[in-house]
Length: 327
Image (cartoon, rainbow, N blue to C red; front, top):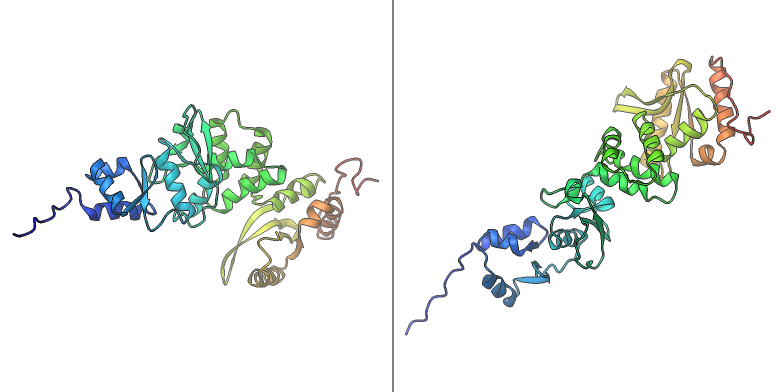
């Protein structure tokens, strides 16, 4: 007697595989239902170890078992309805939407009042306006300008505030003008005055902790002339940008942050830029963290002298009673 043929599943297995592959091997019961997978089908898939239950209503491929932060991000955003990546996790994903740059723990924004328990290595942020701040497109996530503002607001010091905002700009996930507009959406954000001040400086072209430190603590505090920030120059290798250019006096100030100028290739490029400036009859002065943050007053005096030697008619002013420029 011939064996009865096994009936084909009412759903398309290729659609199941496609859904899982789009989401790092993680999918929800609702997503399976949308492609024809019933509860009974899910139980069969679980028994056959085709999928593995992560939590109520969320599943992953058995072979994966959450080996990456991206999988944990999908799990969290599918486990909590109307949620999305928040704060640093939202910025990391905006920088690289493959998810390769995500780090643990995963930060997730959920509507305030939801009583779900937290998941392992997931930090919940219960927000009254989560629905307005989170974009539900693929992997839900907070808009990068709001995420950067929230990261800056909890920084441990002023330099941390500058770093959070300038990183978002340097990663090209948002612009300082957008963050300045987004401040209106976060009326209770801590450190609003400082953040607004830093954003104004970013708009002016001070795009790092060191660059803003020079602007605030050296140039502005001591009455030096205002340089042109991120001045573009075309070179044989393409467009380059000078940190601060005093165009009327033929002086360029380059600010070398430790993170961005430690590699040999970066140092070689810096030296090439200095040669280009000399060919263009401009002198370059390279400053680091010590000159700006440890000896800002002394640095201001030296930069003032360089400017005076090149025709600046002004005088530097002391920044306060303890300033090294004070008489």
